[in-house]
Image (cartoon, rainbow, N blue to C red; front, side):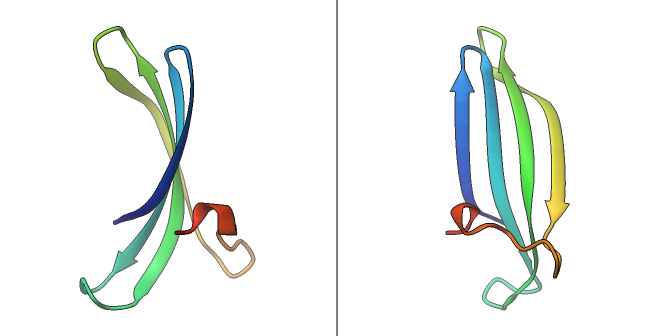
Length: 69
């Protein structure tokens, strides 16, 4: 599930950072977390996703505080 997102836009371009976590049960602890980097383009009628990249949190690569709730 998404726990936080931030976005920046310029003209028809948008970049979204979406922090996610995975839980075995809805009220259980997070078993993994990471960040999706999403690029989108507005075509005049709707937003279209252009590219999605993701990176899972690891012991040597914790999620920065600014991307956490």
